[in-house]
Length: 422
Ligand SMILES: Cc1ncc(COP(=O)(O)O)c(C=O)c1O
Image (cartoon, rainbow, N blue to C red; front, side, top):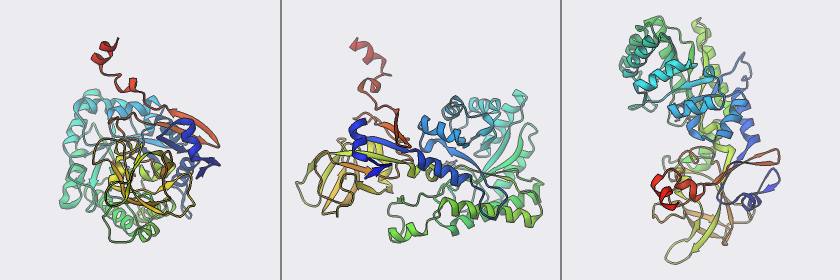
């Protein structure tokens, strides 16, 4: 297997294994697709990358240079966005854990949009704004009938979201012009997107009719699924059929923009700016994780165990998602053996795939775990092993953007251990 003509195994030879490889062209291509004006429309959407999905500063900076804003959910992520030079007017702040001190930071930061996650946050931010003599632009996160709820957002059902907007509008220190609806549950097909958008647009109508509020910033969150990553065991449909029904970025964008524009044209009201916060769909397929076979254990019943140098310490998300895994050196060869792929840590939980058919494995063989650009780096930890390096491949040029963790890095914050070793 090659990427831009480079054998993947040569990348691990040069940079070590395991290794994340970011494909700059694919990243730029995904950005271009999200930023395009869909056919037949006058305008598209404004894109804000969900930082937590793949928080590699070099990737985030590239996205920013390509005109993508930042969607952040913690004071650290806000700091990082600013540190990388993202203008406050290109930042959206979300998330459920806002403390009084976070509220003050947000108010002082003059962000494009601060989305209040639940009703209790309204008074919190309004008070911080009044004290600081500011008037931040805010939206409320609403939960549709089929989106994540509970910890996230205020249900539209039962008039709860409407009541929350009424309360928010009563605070003169808040500029309430936003609406945030992130489904959370992956949007895989056009029907799901239709239902979700329709419910949000009906709520926009209710805000107009009942409270005289015309939403100016319509933030429809993320949730577009990556075509080749599937949640495990949650659908009776065969994998191939599910993949073929998946919405592309183009299809998603066209449908979404058309529905919003159409809705407001018919209603005779100005259409809001449409903001999106893609995570998985932006970076999922822009990165792979290369790893090597460390040992083979054929004892016992069932498939032989191939023990890799990457496991749940780096690829924890594979417990929940199906990702393609290829043999990097013998990609075209027909599979002849069935294996269980285990990680290197001394834990029975550390399993990446229970059964996979591959060419006969040899020690040192390289495997490529595909679509590794969402929630692998975010959830990586240093459980027993150091974390991998990250290389960006851009037009044939390899740049190490994060070196592999060293043992010294792993104890760098442990003051006593450092002192003892001196
Ligand atoms: C508020 C918010 N916006 C955007 C995203 C990105 O979602 P996705 O990766 O599904 O596009 C997330 C992730 O769950 C989120 O919590």
